[in-house]
Structure formats: C-alpha cells, structure tokens
Length: 284
Image (tube, rainbow, N blue to C red; front, top):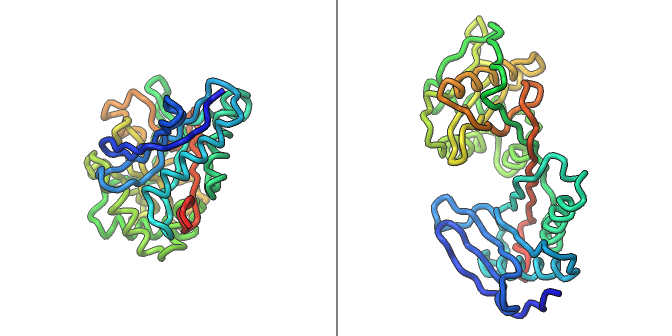
C-alpha cells in the first residue's frame, strides 16, 4: 500500500512547474504545467498518480498534490489554467483499465473544484490515405493581411458551436476575441502564413478560412471555419480538402490532428479539457 503523503515538494523545470510529493520516500504523483515562455504556467498538461495498484488512497494523494500545487502557483481569487488530458484513446470508455486511469484523473480535478469543459475528438490523415479531390466550387488564395484574417475570424465566431470559442466570446466580444485568437493562437505557429487559405466563391465573396500549420508535434489543421452566412452548404469539406492537399505537398507523412471525420479522417484519439471557476482551488 502507498504510504500516507506527508509533505509536497515543488520543483521547476524548463517551461514547466512540477509538484512531487516526497514525504513517502518516492514520487507518488506529478503535476506539471506547460508554459510557452517558461515564465507563466499556461496549461496543466501532466497529472500522474500511481496506476500500478488498486490502492484506494491514490486519488486522495492526487487531490492533496494538486491542491498543494495550485495554492503554491496561483494566487487566491485567480482562475488556474485548464487541465488538458491527452492523448485519450478513442475507445477509453470500453477498456476497463484505461477507463479507470482516465476517470481517476478526472476525479482528482473534480475534487479540487474542476469540471469537464469539453471532450474533443482528434482526427488524423496519413500518407496512405487518398487525397480529397478538388470539387471546383471554391477558389483559394492566401490571406491578404491581418485585418482580413480578423474579419474572417469574426464571421466564423458568429454562431459558433465550439465550446472554447463560445467561452472566449462570452468573456469579451466577438470582435475582441477574434483579435486575441489571431494574435495569441494562430500567429504562434512557426510555419509560414502563406500556407493559410481563404475559400472564395465564384462571385469573389470569401466563405471561410483554413489554417494548415506545423506544430512542434507535426503537421496540423490548426484552424478551420466557415463564416456564419455560408454554413450548411458543405464548404467546410472544400476548405479541409485544400488544407490537406497543401500539407501533403509539404511532405506531411505523419498524422494531422483536429480535423473532421466526414472528410475521411480517422478518429484515433480524444482529448478531455477541464476547467475551474474563478477562485483557485486549494486557496481560501
């Protein structure tokens, strides 16, 4: 049986704040935050607890570890960054052992006041899959400038069903969040902006935008959206096909994540995002 947790030591590694309990003589769990700059925790990306046995204390240990780390890293009254649990197997609910590990981590976060925000599906295209053929309904061109990209994002955000985008709009406005999304998210990819594509009807009107990109983990469709007035006509498939062809031409021969099943992508994994209310748990 795992010994009771007595103390928690925090150590900091490059780009990550990590908490490890040490009073029991060996690491019982780890909580690690990812940071783009290395100065501010942005995402809780690691929450490990001992999965080697059925010790009923493992969730209690995980809760104490996370509470201690949250109180140390985030001032009272502030909202901690979200917890991103990934990769989660697509069939995790059907596998008893994998399901237990996933549910344990969800329960640890729930005990500290967190909740499941959204469960995302992840998709991939691989080089042995036929490329989608152009359908000829849209022409494609690069984004002209910053303002055009922001205007398109504003149109895509109008009426969006994406949970993260809805939350961002609710905290500010469509126009303000479009600028934040553009500068903080889309411009963060190191790949050239010349890869981005605007889908244009034959009359010259833009209907949406596709952002093929390269992340540290490989090629991705970083963003894909159709503006509010042009939804329901299948333009998302045209945009996705164009982005897929562009990345294939760049040599994409490993998975691209976050696309759509109806365009022929394989649902290979899931991702569970959890969040907290405004007050940092573990602080009062």
